[in-house]
Length: 176
Image (cartoon, rainbow, N blue to C red; front, side):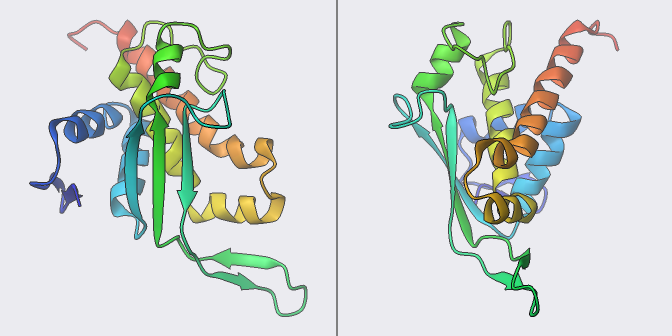
């Protein structure tokens, strides 16, 4: 546990604090940070050397643990889900480096990150991946399977907004 009761715990490293603080610098990033720290889902964030083993475009991946689902008695369709008990977000540093150098074919989730710092890019990635741990996103995953568009739509929207908000902050003079 690195964040509890509105403060970092003694287990938070300098990198945890820098990433958390960077995520909170934008409105949407702060919303994602709050989802992360207030969620009943125990979430581990791993920084992995190299690139994703199978998805060359992936900057990160999220694996959720067990969760309970509820179905409609008549239709047998899934109508609700409990938050997962645990999740692991893996960030692939080789892909992050590639994106930062401008070598990434699609930028970050199809969005340019030109001029953004390493920490700002990480904040957008974490904001994206946190959305994958939400009950709403789990229901989409259950409904559509692993069809990329539906499962990635809301997380990509979140990361793109974080990037846009970061770019707007860069344009404002320091005295605003």
